[in-house]
Length: 113
Image (cartoon, rainbow, N blue to C red; front, side, top):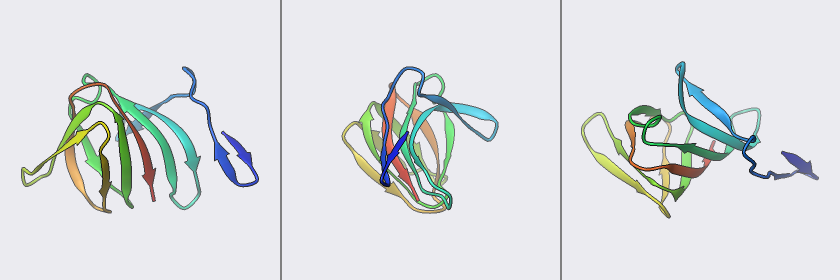
């Protein structure tokens, strides 16, 4: 990341991705654009149907994202299903939880606040 007068920039390279591990389990890879003290995060996250076959999705703060590639499904504890598709914009509030199931190689640009 490069910080020019408060402007964050980044370039994606093969080695700029790092494992995204939560609850002791790798759930994909992440490339951060912004990581601010106090909870603001922004960047790219990717996973595939093998790694992201069925993972917990628990929102702390709020999670807003644009799906750049792929398809996935969220299933809430009460059985409601939300289809995530390329081109879609989604925003989930603090405390939202679901089971995430990746259907095809998946990439999203996210902002967590």
